[in-house]
Length: 277
Image (cartoon, rainbow, N blue to C red):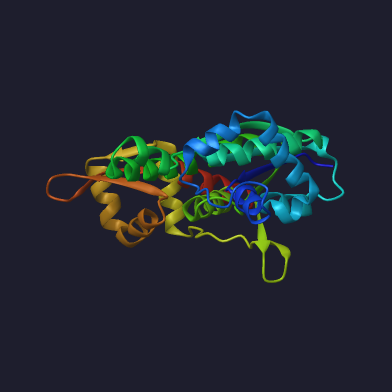
């Protein structure tokens, strides 16, 4: 069996499901960070939530509901998991439960990555700062997910992305990262109660666009007259590559492009195209 690496976006479904089943108080909001911090520091509460998940992991955790279906009948020793979530006590609590449960089943877990939780920043800073940190966190998240997926891919792992849990922005970012690295992406279709694998979707450059990417890939950055000549000859192609973030440009005070550079995403797509030809 080929080794698998599952990247899972985690939300707070364990908390919401536990509240619905009166395992923890229903009047506590996700914003009530101090309460969730208290639960994190209480071993008996951790065990109570873990027992709740063990009772019916498919029903009580959205993340496990998808993951366990995909890895059914597979050897846990060949499967590694990378959980990530928001920098909030509520999310950390859910991840802690998932880690304890999955480790007991024999899966190997990587240290989770935390991104801006908004609620946490908004509590201690002003709203504009919280929004800026959230947006920055999303951008950093995409880069990190692409990096770790590519690293494990080179090590021979089959890469899977599970964008089931978390905020909508995190779900979108997780799925996008999966598309960019040509990985398997799965989620739960609640209407049919089935796990669905998404088709591979992304804009693939062609013709002159590939010529431009190859040129930039060998030169890294072009500037000055070379940039001007390239843009005048391939304006439509360059503008399309900019839209899909396969290249980036810099302009002068007059708005003229004077520097063009291939992005990491552009290099990634170019590498995939070469491997498939």
